[in-house]
Length: 198
Image 1 (cartoon, rainbow, N blue to C red):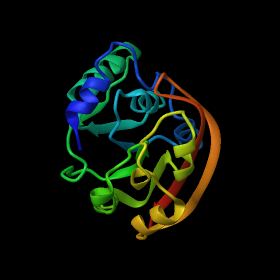
Image 2 (tube, rainbow, N blue to C red; image 1 turned 180 degrees about the vertical axis):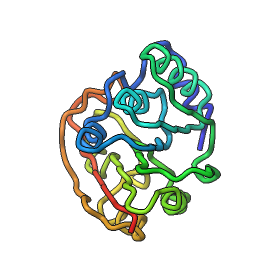
Image 3 (cartoon, one colour; image 1 turned 45 degrees about the horizontal axis):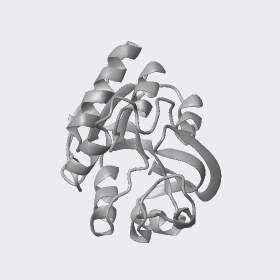
């Protein structure tokens, strides 16, 4: 995990992944009543602010101070409140339990990925949902963003094993065109997962 890398990436005043929410997150939120939602590795806040505007009680964390600064600035501009902490994914802890946890392009190194994913499940309420969208291995041949190491790309099978304590309702690879700021532009291959705590 490298806070300095992300602080530098987010240094500019524009938003590297844009201001619009991720499409999968939109689909998850639009059909559910608001509750308490945790965003993991939330970056500059586009998704957290969108959820807060829909009435969700939003909590988020990231390792980048600059990301937090921009996310809180965006929340203020949009007239909403979000709780945004600086934390490492392996060390995150909370006394709260969440109706949903969202990991939107929260790519983790292979050595800690499974541990982080299993660690997060404990923070879901019973029948709480986990939503994840991330790049799949086919992204290596595309140019719309994401890690360039196959070990940091996800497959449905890998995620189903990581989240084996959840009831998996959706785990699929999909190709669609991203339009998420300068950082995610063009055709992409992604994996989407939705799991429910038993």
